[in-house]
Length: 226
Image (tube, rainbow, N blue to C red; front, side, top):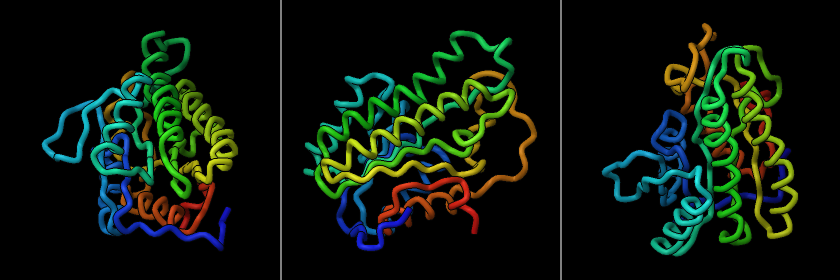
């Protein structure tokens, strides 16, 4: 969906990217910086970049602390993109409770905590972006837990969009097809099936940033085809 009357000026805007050191997160950071944004990345691992925060966003207190730190340091927060996530493979009969908890804590709870914290602090005209992925449109055998966690993200984003609209904040749920981020090779459980070649992270990042620029509010998988 487009809002043709809305355009986003990126110059000197402050953006926070969760999972900003990963395959897609890095591409998003590069694209935003090229448009004049101040970009802060956050992940669970330390980084030498002064605009990186090491934090576990699966904790609501940690998510709130990260949002507060960005605003305190930069005076504003205009874009929040959640590009963090983990994946698990295997039939549910062979999936451990620990795996289920890990996937939902990272993909679903972490997303909710981050967006909840951000919405309470960002200003009118800001943008929140969740990346639920194509799996949220049709779940697959052998990926039931991962797909369910991402479907929950998509459902949450639908409701969040309506709630945030009252504050003048836009929400985008992005559902790109399989993307070559390397996530499948770092599964928390199971072994990835043989996927066809996916999209390049740069192309997906550019499409998401274009959606922010043009006032779009939803990015189904079909929006990523040429």
